[in-house]
Length: 175
Image 1 (cartoon, rainbow, N blue to C red):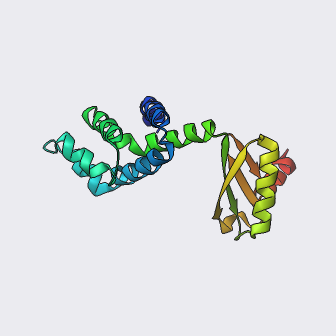
Image 2: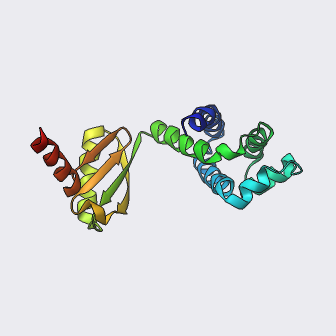
Image 3: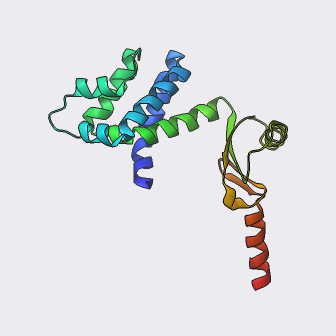
């Protein structure tokens, strides 16, 4: 995984630079997400690795309808360098670069049960105050947390789950 991220990073930076210069960062986000889903599909992955598949055919498979020529050339570069399998990592790193440039923090709130909209809004407001940036929140439900929530915002993880509190209490009692 670490090697894939290392290999994908220069491609993500190049994609981001190309997209920003063209003023099409959002379009490239969608196009990269599509290409990443295709590249991650086991059948498409096997097809992309086939030696008889030409570069143009691989690009046609990976590119969404309406993709611009610059994006297709970018995909062609990945295919010719045998890096199409890195598209999921490239897409993820591209989104990180885009969020950083837009001064947006992507946070994931995992809770034991579905959270009401009012609680999500208060969490979003608190994170906005903490980071001084706009915050986009995605949610997930994990019943094993028992209660509370875990907030993952990039390098910051706030574990307010009951499971986490019990684990910390157990550690303190063991000492």
